[in-house]
Length: 324
Image (cartoon, rainbow, N blue to C red; front, side):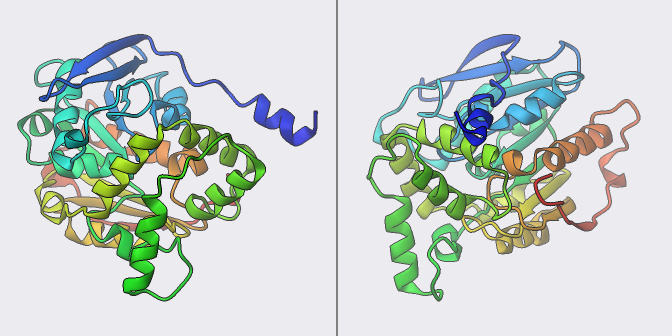
């Protein structure tokens, strides 16, 4: 076995949950929920993105579970959460699901920091005006995400912006072609489309295993929802301290989305731009993403956390060291 193959084979296994729960959404859909870390610790809720699963947050769970209670769940049709009928794919359904997870995993009135990557961030935007969101969300992290014009702004297809590029991008992202097993070629394609050029090979392999495990019908159905996404109004409803993290080499949700979010959010506390990082920030730059979650917990859930009136807006552009 080559040295590179050994690195792939010895990748850390996903963390084992302390407890597993089932949340029941408004339409009866059952969601797989995992709880990590000690009871009574500050709570963090993680929502993964399109074609991923709770395994996507493995690095954050390992680091945070030592002194946080970390709740992660599989979006409908992903991971261990069953697939749903065609009508069950919508941003309203994503918001319903998040409300169900918050009600199931947290005590009444308990506050948490909510972090969403890509479609998970869109889930937070969709739920921003919901009662359970207001009850439980102390602060939020929007990670590598956008609120509208996802296909039109995508840089996956390397050509000038316009109608043809938009149609071609939509056809590629919504393709029904099976991904099949992970191969060297598929890793290269995934790396080009979703990760920065300097991403370590083992992190590319980790993302490939997660994405290729997503069932094709789920991947296609949600691609169509994201192509029509318009959550600009939801951004304006996020009236809580919110940090935005994005990679400057993101082709799926380019940095223009992060900057637009930071400008539109009522209480943006920080914009962090990770130089050379692509779309898969929690895997590509796990230390940076985990640090942002810890900052939000310390500022808004800690014993000495100031009130919202003390949160100030600042923009931070952080250079991520290659292969950090």
